[in-house]
Amino acid sequence: MRRKRGLSDAQFAYLLLLPAVFLFGLVILYPVARNVYLSFQEKSITTGMAEHFAGLKHYGKIFTSDLRFRQALGNTVYFTVVSVAIEFILGLAFALLLDLSFRGRNFARASVILPWALPTAVMAMAWRWIYHDVYGVANDLLLRLGILKEAVAWLGQHPLAMHAAIFSDVWKTTSFMALMFLAGLQPIPQDLYAAASIDGAGIWGRFRHITLPLLRPVMVLALLFRSLQAFAVFDLIWVLTQGGPGGTTETLSVYLYSYTFRYLNLGYGAALSMAIFSLTLIIIFVILLFRKEEVELG
Amino acid sequence: MKRKRFLSIGIALGVGVVVLFSLAPFLWQVVTSLKPSNEIFSRPVRYIPSHLDLSAYVKIFSRHPFARQILNSVFIACAGTFLCLFASSLASYALARLRLRGGRGFLLFLLFLSLFPPVVLIVPLYEMVSTFGLMNNYLALIIPYAALNVPFATWVLTSFFRQIPEALEDAAKVDGLSRLGILVRIILPLSAPALATTAILVFIFCWNEFLFALTFMTRATSRTVPVGIAMLSGASQYEIPWDQISAATVLTTLPLVAFVVLSERRIVEGLTAGAVKG
Image (cartoon, rainbow over all chains, first blue to last red; front, side, top):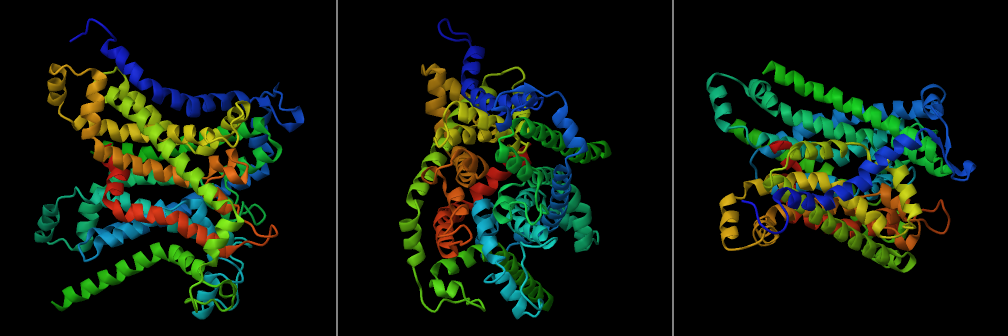
């Protein structure tokens, strides 16, 4: 039904989309396009913030001579793989546990959500205090239990600092995995388990042949979201170690940030942004391949 | 019978470990914030304070612009959430009801772009913010926060709007309501639960965001709470006031704790809405 006066449905629809498109264009589309342009320019304090065409100079540096980039890439991959793997397994365990019925289940679920809801930067300060070399509770507990012989500088030496950061990340984000898995467990019909029991399947058999396959789509999504978040990690590392000691915990986001804003080197910063953007794209495609394979298998 | 009992003890034990693991770092901040300062810096560590001492809570307000930073955070998070929901609910209505060619593809494209690390936006956004003179201005955070959440909010709201029966709208049309009237008087009130869930999640994002707040708010009095806490320092750069940090942590996370306890179910639904329906 068309109206005689005023806008057509399509025009009205575009009008409604306008604020969202404006916001998104301003904050995401334009910056992405601008990065492409800037990555071929020289723009920093040394050029007086004027732009000079630099060609492929920045990209050449990233791929050949930028050792700090290479170290940050290695750190980021290590951080992502180790922390996501641990979170995946722990999150699955948490979800299976919280899916059972027991008294105080809502309290338990709320507690598990909490680490996810708290600000990462603030909780990173809390972890710094826990890891404090002199007055920290981590050293104190482990000394009392006899696991450590003497106090350790958790954030001050390699490779301890990286693993301390991973532990904090696992604490913070296992809850997200658990929540996703918990939601994925809800629609699995109880009859399936009952039928399998009658057919003689044990706990492991039911888990392996019912829970795991039906949970797979949620697993792929959880893996996708968490891998991308871990790959982008900034807040946690920035507050815990600022990338130290000796750059051994510096991730790509932290490197991009500290390098760019130290010398306001926007041209090189844009090229680094493009590199991170491309690497993210690769991760997305690799993880989505898992999903495709699942479709092919039916 | 014996086996069942054994199992339920096992469950209780497992749940206990999970809950303790999740709450411990937060609880340790609570304990630290209530200790007299000589017991904070003592070895071996004291786990139970000899008496409660609230001086850290006084100091955080008297020695730092913490009250101001709370106000900044509250204002920015509320405004960002409001702007995001405003833009997203209009867009969602267009995508859910007014058959747009390529609407779903457009939404998927937005979601795809929001998977990329926010740090890749920082260089151009920094340029923009400094060109427009918006350093230390609330707008420098409100607009990005709203924009970054538009894809997620639009996704959740679109799928919710689709579930509202169209017959309701047809009836309203007969009664002479305009299209905008239908949206404001019929769709939005019916969507209150979905709007609330989305608002909670967007608010938590805005309240917790660190990277942009660190970059665009350079004055202590303009900072939001997470940056304010991360940058707290004492008389010298190396002297970190752990007592005040713990007090500040407790104060800024208490509203989130309340949020989580009151709306645990909503958060779970909202967070997984995309995952399960998509």
